Amino acid sequence: MTLTIYGCYRSRATRVVWLANELGLSFEHVPVVQAYRLADPQASDAPLHTRHPDFLAVNPNGHIPSIDDDGFKLHESLAINLYLARKHGGPLAPKDAQEEGLAVMWSLWAATECETHALNLQFHLAAYPPEKRKPELVEAALSALPGPFAVLDRTLAEGGGYVMGGRFTVADINVAEIIRYAKPATALFEAAPHVKAWLDACHSRPAFKAMWQAREAEPA
Image (cartoon, rainbow, N blue to C red; front, top):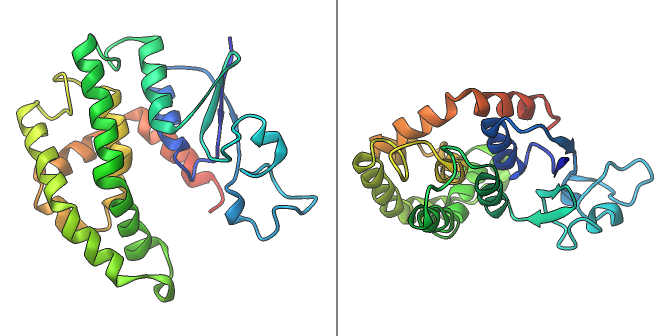
């Protein structure tokens, strides 16, 4: 049986690789670059990218990551992680229907309540050159995120430093990989000390470090 992960490390594929590392899964990694990052996606020497016919045959939506798990194709990083955790079991997986509901809830919560604003903080406080940054998006994010951060902070305080179940699970990975985007806004984390400590603990895990080392080795 073969697990193939499609997507470059500088994408949401990091979530899937981190989880696979935590589970000790062997996998084939097929680098797929976002087409918008290429000067000419149609060039004969262009790398495999999200609009290339070969990749569209895997994911017709043209987004990364995707997986092929012994013939079963699945898209959307958060869903992929929930699937792999459920399939392989162990402490990362929900132990019952209630935990499964919580894992889905927290994954969707992070995606809907936090991700857009967190990405805007990453891009417009750090990643983009100054001339491309939009202060109004930073202001909107800094106005929107304290509430969700407070919710997460209280949950972590009551849950022994974890999102659910009193242990490290797939929910921690899915939420942490979204909250990570907001790191340039240090004031958010100073106001939510349990979030800061939890994210630091997540990033100290060997499986995360192995993923991040591979990400840092990949061309920007």
